[in-house]
Amino acid sequence: MITRPLDLASKLRSTPRSFDALFWVNAGVIVLFFALFGSRFVLAPGVGVDFSLPQLQGATQGAARTTHVISVARSGLIFTDKGALNFDQLKQWLAENGQKTQSPVLLVRADAAIPVADLTDITSAAQEAGFQVQIAALDPRSPQGERR
Image 1 (cartoon, rainbow, N blue to C red):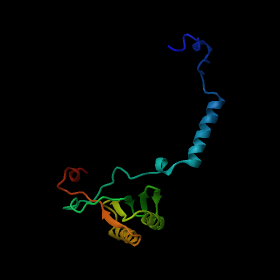
Image 2 (cartoon, one colour):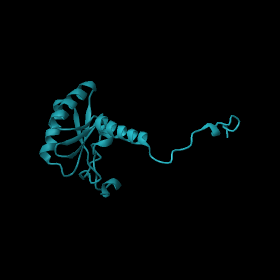
Image 3 (cartoon, helix red, strand yellow):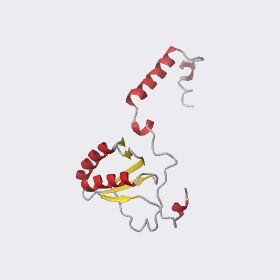
């Protein structure tokens, strides 16, 4: 090893055999840090494993390249790159991002159980902000559409 010529291994402190007070102070500071400054991307719940896209014949034929993506897990819970938003916050997000991008296209990944009224409200708000809207769906004939 590289430490043998300088005999550095003999000068190292031995590992502690028990948890001292400094350990508990460090653990408390880490918990406090995550409680106060936790990232909503890491600690907030995301789209669950039971999220399923609706199936639609010919869903892949109208596909277009999108510039922005949102996921609607349930009514009132919308995920963007900014985190979880409600509908009023989504309107502001759409207005801000619609002006930044030239010819913006929004992909809406909505769970199959989302009410159509909520989906049309989101679509209307996006179109008012200048977005072209694409609704994500699976083609039942494709290999991805067969998985549930």
